[in-house]
Image (cartoon, rainbow, N blue to C red; front, side):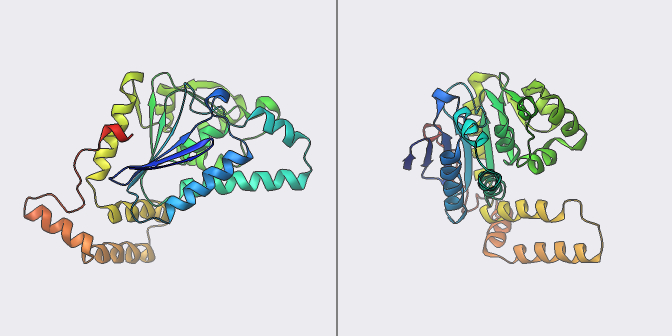
Length: 273
């Protein structure tokens, strides 16, 4: 297992290619500022370029997942010019984009409060597993602001109707409601959170790495598209290409020969999560 510590963002990569990115700012409830955003962006971009990363888990230390923007950073931003505010907003937007489009499967592990921009972090992950004690709030309007940079991902996660409500009300809601809205995929008791994340990792490690990456991209590419001949041709070409690929051939042969495929590494080691 390899590890990297970069102040308030930690990165660990285990022997099976599972990368865990951890917000390490618990004394401020893992609120993020411009420096943490920069570190997260650098980390996500580095992981994106690696072929050996099979799964990425986004987690945090302490009782809160993230309180969103750090108050001292927000105080600084209040005195910024329009140009400086735009630069800061673009940095956050680029970080969210880097997370959203990571090629490998991504899991958000949410143990507590996720406010403001933290709802954006969750919305950018493929799978969100939350403690029953986790809570969420799109709190920006309470400060006279709007959830602008996170909005494309949050609307995609919870839908337009729910976004219209929660963007305006800034209501706090809990994991069960977040599950109903589509923001959270699994709700578990707090003591079961680590085990449930570990089970999901094991499920993902049993699948073809390239197939998962292509399946994720497929979802992005076909969403809301008209079902016409162009789309039919594109999807047919995709399945034909992967069937004749090395991974596709290995997967099919393993199935018919009733054996594990060569990418199946077994149960994920819980000690590394």
